[in-house]
Length: 63
Image (cartoon, rainbow, N blue to C red; front, side, top):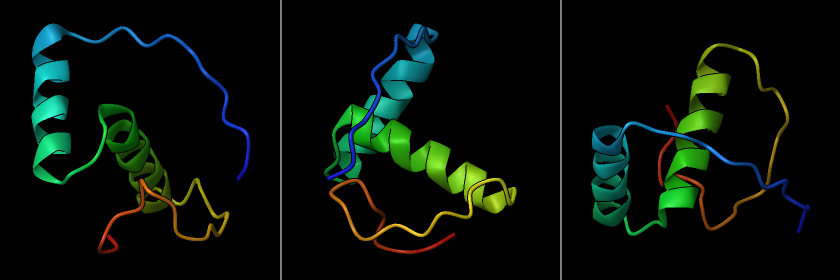
């Protein structure tokens, strides 16, 4: 497994609440959901071309 870098992220409480609910709905951790959101946004914009194997935070479907 690749090493991951930790960092602090400040979010509006309502944004965090919405992400936590979304994560729970998809049986992910909040951290995993945030990573999934970021990776998919990067892929959509063509800014993340690295191909990765499946992990716990990978989605069931591609965007």
